Amino acid sequence: MDTTTLDTTVSNADFLATVATKSDGAALRGDYTHADEHYVVQQNWAAYTEEEHELWRKLYQRQMSLLPGRACDEFIEALLQMNAANGIPEFEKTSKELYAATGWTIVAVPGLIPELTFFEHLANRRFPVTVWLRKPEEFNYIVEPDVFHDFFGHVPMLFNPVFADYMQLYGKGGLKAMKLGGLDQLARLYWYTVEFGLINTKDGMRIYGAGILSSGGEVEFCLTPGTTSRHIHLDIERCLNTLYKIDSYQETYFVIDSFQELFDGTAPDFKPYYDKLKLGEAFPANSLLPGEVELLP
Ligand code: PHE
Ligand code: CO
Image: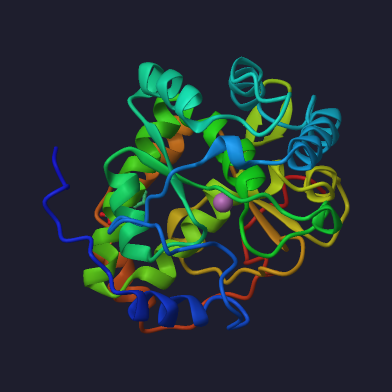
């Protein structure tokens, strides 16, 4: 299937307008001056400083001390094979291994990119990874995604064939949602699965969402029983209709039993969902609806 024929050119002015509604309106951090029409840049690996490599190692070690028994096996196994412990990785090396495993590649980007461009990359099995690393004072918390979040959090899961296929279909679904007015709904699915998803395994509940896996505090919080946050089984319509918080731990986590379940559940045409949900009110981030079961009481 070829989606490369779509026009991906988005003017800078359009993009900055898009971004202003997403963040606090401040200037984006990345350097967009060398980006091509797909917002792709060179990683320029040789330009990272020794201090940045050292900060990466510290971030990596801290996360790895938290992940055993919490991250899903698929994530940990792929991460270990990626040999990313010793400093900021060279994207091209991992990209070759990833391509051999699932046909995905990594492309370097300056930071946040326009929705259309993002969906186009995913639809063509290209994952955009931000090139810059956070500052030392942002060790625990960062607003915009940096290379640690994008690479450490997202890339390992792309080695899993079913999840990799899900991500591509998500990109195609994004292009479709743009035409159908379903972007708000579809963004919630990304948030609650790709970024903050949990999965039941034979060993217990585990994390597969990149937003959790790259975060110091939420790794522990999201699997702690008895917090005020919900852990409910993923229902696609419910998820598409649930608001989320971007500046606190999640108040609802959606839990799947397998990546195949995620893939199969999202395969149907979403147009009926969009048509229906556009007309109503979305659920607050902390809802527990009648009949829903808290899976981590
Ligand atoms: N099936 C969805 C649609 O028709 C597309 C999609 C697939 C969305 C996978 C998300 C994940 O719009
Ligand atoms: Co992310």
